[in-house]
Length: 150
Image (cartoon, rainbow, N blue to C red; front, top):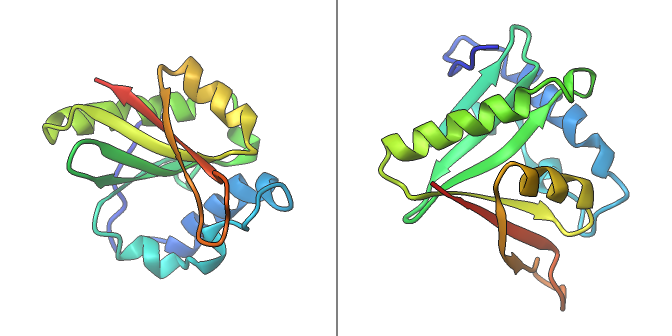
């Protein structure tokens, strides 16, 4: 269960398929629909931050993007058949290590407001709700922002 950074040549299509499987449970639950529908495997291949993967073939992954005051943890994905086996915890631990190495004091992530089961996981992993965001055209919040101070 050792994470690695994929390098070309890499099967970005398979990694993108993993992310789509992991996010499939939100279909029909969130409004507006996930930005995953606008994403491609090529977006992963050319991401300017860091991508970390566990397994060959991939069982879990995350996308890390440095921001001024935090390391943003995005697309945290565990293949449904491998969920509840500690993969997310390993990736979040690694994200903490990467944030410290980059001199950043916190991790940050967003989760859609409807996905309360994900919120419970983030709280259990030491995150605190820090705020909310709204997608264009929505009067109220559509996502919650979580941070974990390191």
